[in-house]
Length: 225
Length: 232
Image (cartoon, rainbow over all chains, first blue to last red; front, side, top):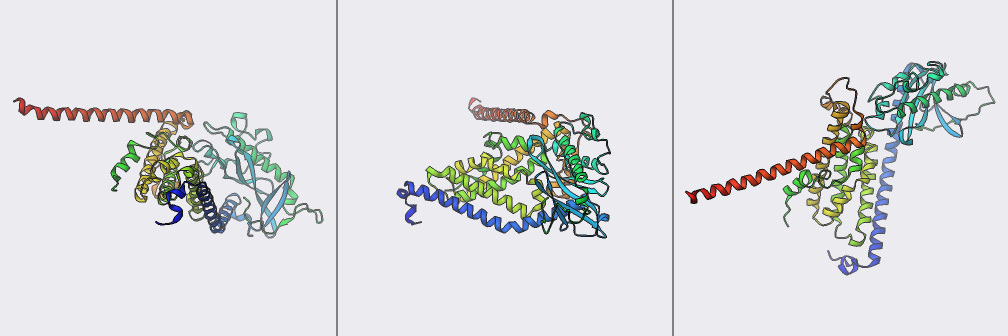
């Protein structure tokens, strides 16, 4: 190679170092930008598929004949917008699905999707994302343990409010060997999800009196889970 | 210059193993080796990054000046890991759900930077690729060994959830050694990782010393045989 800037004496210069570092930084940033542009639609599509799979898991098919991913309402949950997916059958909302989050072990956020029917009974809960210790706290995933199914069919009065805790705290739900903080956080988050439903029931079920609608239907907020 | 590929492989797998000889990359090691499956996943992802980073760095080694080489390596490795993360998320989404946790951890794996500095910045592209592959496989083996030991001691299973990582065809790998095992929590927590690593290191040392002694013994008998005719 006979490029002038490759001669050893040029490579000793400060300007070569600056240009090299700057050039590499530019190149790598450009590569990441291009890759982001190329993969963005695919990743969005995969996330949408994941969302649909999750919705199907927490709301059984008999509850709806609409496209739940598109039928959403955004509710203000303590200053934070929360997207609620509504399952309708014959025009009436039969069940809703939304996500709740809780700080897990080490304060990293866990995201849990819950499906609730008209009566406030939990149809299902699934952990969407978490950073819990592999082999210990990750038993909250359905693929590793069926612990999360113990919430199905529960409601705010079943078990009694003071029983909404892990067994170690005198509650009704199992903890795992070596991991109490994670299941404790999940129990608390699911309970908070049911309380959210109780507080916004009329709005979520699309039965709020006309003219007093606090939440606006979101047109197409696709994949917020 | 002809390269000693056999030597490179022995270095990566045994003599200069990332974990058991260089003692590098212990942070991701302790974090993920609670099961053999996790170790395998992390090992394979790291091998991919080591291989590509060694190739990239060896092919532009003539352009990179000594003074700024470290930030340039760091930039290149971080970019490669980000690219791998996005590509796997978009096109191998099932794998991403299993490996997603491990991929960003590779950036903090100092073994990748170590190989760039020690090997790829000074040697031809093909030799560097072989080195990256050998080091990666050595690391994978170490992760699986440590993960397997901790899994057996901690939860009495082996290769639990392997079918999630490798596909349903590998479900036969999943073994439960003792049903209804209560679990030995210490082994699953980082201190257990250090304990197991300590015993494995001691085992490697002992094996090497034994082989050395045996080799010396063989040399002695050889010289003995040579001497005997003259004595007779």
